[in-house]
Amino acid sequence: MSKDDGDRKLSWREIDKLKSQSGLSKIRKKLERKDKASSGIDTKNKQKYLKELDKLFVDKEELEKQSFLERLHQQYGNKNFKKLAKEFVERYGLPEDWRTLMLFLDLDDKNLVIKTLEKIKELFPQRTTTEKQGMLSKLKTLVLTSKDETISFKVETLLKELSL
Image (cartoon, rainbow, N blue to C red; front, side, top):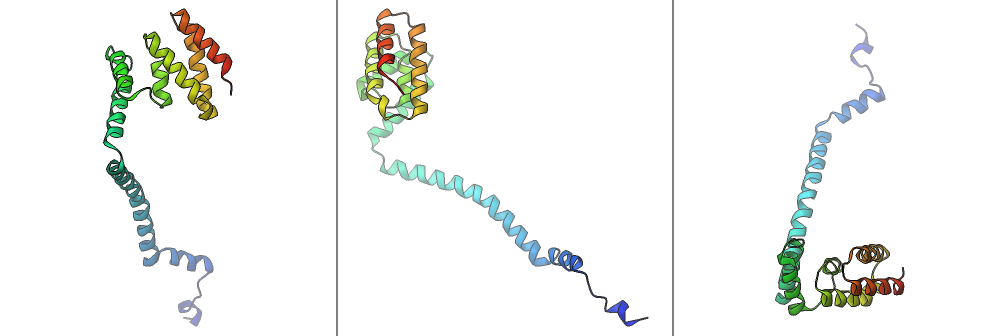
């Protein structure tokens, strides 16, 4: 038995292999996995916390308006939508929300649609290019599908005035 058999030096590859199998590296990997898992939970909890915090500082009337808007969007396409839209306008006036204004364009009420068109004209310059493109395509569709000639004419003139 030679002296070299018992005191054999390890190659660098073997040393790295032993390091990666050490207890500390296993603990470190477990901690990293826990951090990744808990970070997803933390962001959810943080968002939930921020929503609750916002509720404390939001005006009650604004909160009612938001819930009414949600209900209005849920009722789109139903018989109650026209009634809810009129009720919303009576309580709060025309919305500033672009999505809701688009929904109001589909109403049968001529006066409300014309008021909505005026509101769109007023808010149009402040919108992003994508929002403007979406509204212009909605207005073009409205020109083609509207049964009322007055509304079609108003929309056509509005389309000529608005530009990206």
